[in-house]
Image 1 (cartoon, helix red, strand yellow):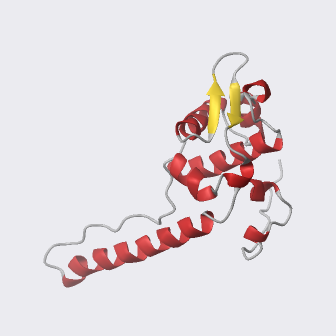
Image 2: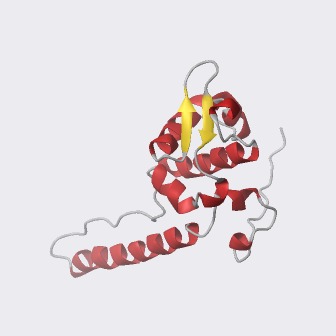
Amino acid sequence: MSDSQRFPVAAHALAYLAHKGAHSAAQAVASGVLAASVPTNPVVIRRVTALLAKAGLIATRAGASGGSWLLKPAETITLDEVLRAVNGCAHLGSPPAGAKGCPVGQHIPRQVARVLTAADTAAAERLSRITIADLLADDPASLSEIPRPRARAVAPA
């Protein structure tokens, strides 16, 4: 799975666990069920849930009766916390080193790095105001200022 997909898959999985009321081992949701909801392969889900468990957001149990469940209420899990849990990054990349001896090549990487840091900081700050519970709500206040994405055209089968 690409690094860029870990965060959306993690947010989806956490929202699904919250939706299903999975707050204990007795209510655990199997990786196959989570995978069907995303949709992705159960192996992808297990990789992401391992990261979420390491961060203390969920617990997991292996085996035929295994699965995942939330350790915290969805209202307290912020998206910046999810991003950090899956080692995701909100940044836009890293500037190349630049060519030695070139006045632009020596100056621009520092400036681009500053811009990227500012963008990353702004994204993390915004994500810190959105919770997993907000993702499940119809029109939460935390998303009111964010434009809705346009619907994607679906290719005929």
